[in-house]
Length: 219
Image (cartoon, rainbow, N blue to C red; front, side, top):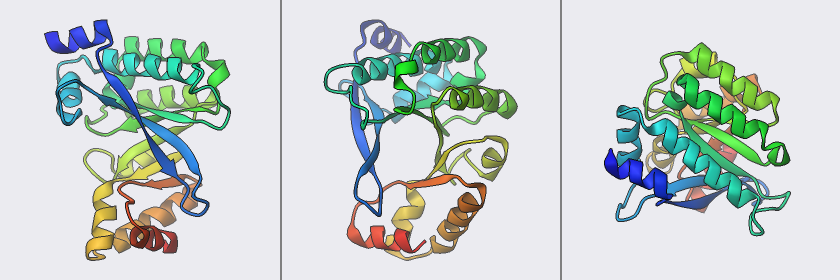
């Protein structure tokens, strides 16, 4: 806990930007802002620990502020560059954190259409109506929302039923299986059809070769 507190106070973390590409045009749709901590191979354990001890709200807000600063910098300030920032369900469930998030967004009118948010599933959301209320405030102010890691962990179909979002990001385990043995094909087809019916965009993780790209295009 002391280490995380120090990281937040000193800004001792980095953001890396991973491109999400349109399968049909090859054009980058947006970049996902991913946090990296010094001397750690993966941020997963640190983030889940922060969730478990009630510190993830401060972490999410620090990452958001860093992303906003970058988007306003010389390098990031371009109408064609869009960035997505992850938010834990526990952050959105916490009244104080949600209030600070909305304050940041209210002062970021210059980033409308360029800043997106992803609701992560590493910690289960208990108060879905309250979280959906925050998500709709973000959407009404011009900031699209994505449901991350759909199909894995807590992010199941009841999330999609309770939360109105603009995009669904399909968990990478399904995508890996489709290129390995095809066992996940019926599930991917069902998810894709459901999203089409709901008029929700679909994003797939772990698309790393031409074979997988072509298989996903068929779906």
